[in-house]
Image 1 (spheres, rainbow, N blue to C red):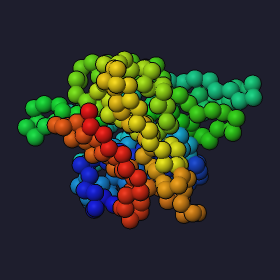
Image 2 (image 1 turned 30 degrees about the vertical axis):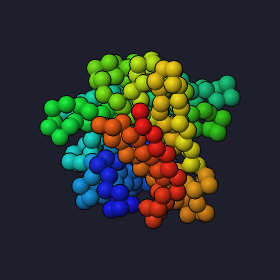
Image 3 (image 1 turned 90 degrees about the horizontal axis):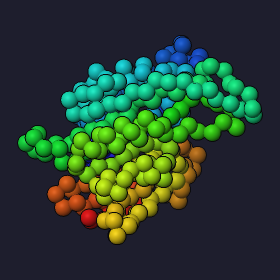
Length: 276
């Protein structure tokens, strides 16, 4: 697919791995080795990339900081535990008690670290001006698979404060990538001036093909809400577990935005386009 599309930048939308085995981590170091394989793929293709964490990536108990450390040295990875030359990073380390059926769960469930929150700056050909911004947000996850009655984590107030501060410093248009589709939470946290610069919010959690063009002409607001891991007809295809990809093309001069879903043969299965 990357051969046909030749993307400038790739964002993995979370649940990039699903080990869910402490034994596999101890014996085989599965999560770290898999993320390194992902990084090596993009190194070989010479494609810049980053990712957001999903609700499954850390369920084997492997800390997010270890995963980030494993891919930080790769040249084509944009991200890290601290801000870099072309991006700002937010790292949050905190704990919060988790309850299920009225009982407090073990301490391992209280860890609520958030990594891979990035504000990535895209420069023009002269490398002098920022013409676009890409924000990523960690929607949270447990370091051990929780009981079925425990809900997914939510975005934190600290993440919204950081995002709004970055948007105040950077006036260019932007889009947001996260895992769980907290579209309303994000839009409620942004003021109208920021929403007028927003091109789209892209989430990786859902297994279907969803996209919705939000428009408020009175406030000059128009942006796309969409799922990155799309599939024809919704869900996984057959029993293979295959997920497809969403391509996004943004013209920073005209303001044209094109987004389309691709199947495993890089054939377009759905398409959305708009111009500001």
